[in-house]
Length: 189
Image (tube, rainbow, N blue to C red):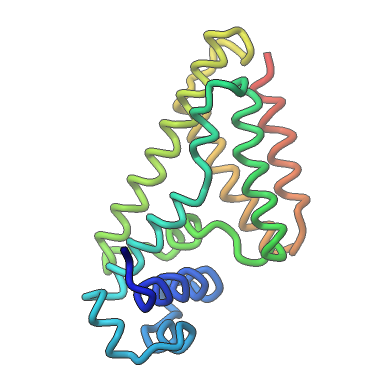
């Protein structure tokens, strides 16, 4: 069972990383938001990077990627529901926080090599999951044949992250709706 203090630190870090970015957010900002003494941080985490890894893991776990492997939903609907989940999440946040994976990726560098590798792995896993759904949809005759599932999955994620960045700038859902409309049309047979 996780300690309540640790949980407060992780929740505060996710909020602060999302709002300020990884580089602009210091440990003091995180512990102040969590309402815990700075020394508490070091009882649970050796570095800010190790905390960011846990935050990333929690974010991915809360991203409902399991929708993509739900066999009771058609492949086309799985992809639509997956991205629609994010749209509803961003709507709840007022369209200003964006995707934590995208935000952290934009800041990743050689100075945070473990976090950078975790982001690469997370994006690769996400790509594999979407590619699998596309391949299944093609096999079932539901999605356009002849498309390379991995290439299309990478394109969808890259396009999604770009739409999310524009959403943050415009403060509305239109870029996300544009993405979803075009992405689903691209996959239709």
